[in-house]
Length: 303
Image (cartoon, rainbow, N blue to C red; front, side, top):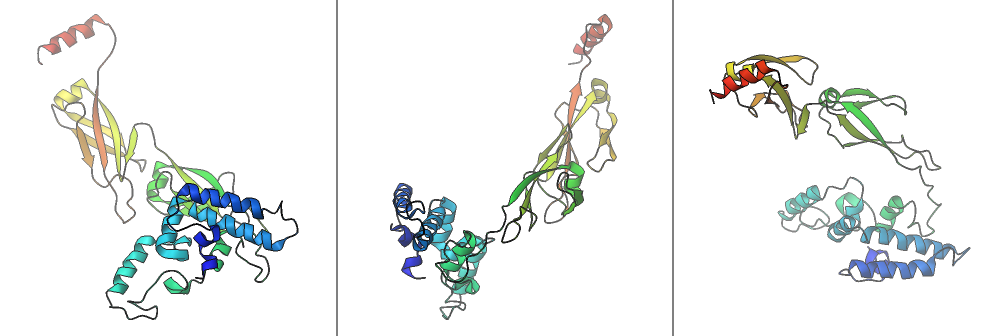
């Protein structure tokens, strides 16, 4: 990668520059090369885009960290830094064979499988900002769109086809999706000259009253009577699948006791399911009926 395409060199700052210094350098250069001050000057416009693209990376702590460690490759969509580090360690174990093969592996330039140079990379990331006059201008694709999609607890566990209200059509979801998870539908966003953007579905799981999700497990509050707590008994409780489960309550159960139904929780991404935990909550009758007060006072003698 040549110096004139190094992001720090583009802004004229050192690689250990503080965030404030980077911001100051960007503002100075942006004012100088802004299209409003340089009308009908393609070179100034290209320079302005280059400066803006460099600042977009170096002002973002996560992107800057990846760029510092891996060079342009670290900025690519879907780049996995942990996998890259593992590869580096594996490659280093071969003892410096060179030539981009194990032991001579490097990021930056044409590393990591010959991804190309920074010009190519940031040209893709920022809509042709680094085109530098090489070939025709890249037309921008449409904007990415983000929409909320509400799922039932059962849909989140089982996956399957879900209708997209207000959008049309269906989407097939894998089992075990999580609340807040984003699902990307390529080319389903806003249309543009260079093609459509992407649609991102933000999943919202409508957890039924009484349930709580804790990781891969479900917690369900189960109300029982004083009599059931003292004598024991059975109670029917709902499951996420829409069926019921017969819960046997041991005699002498205390409020807050937690019982487990194995494999009735959320679907795990690696396979299998978590557990459904049933929290016993003793409910007492209310009111000022004299008969009730008499029974309660009689019960006090047994504490």
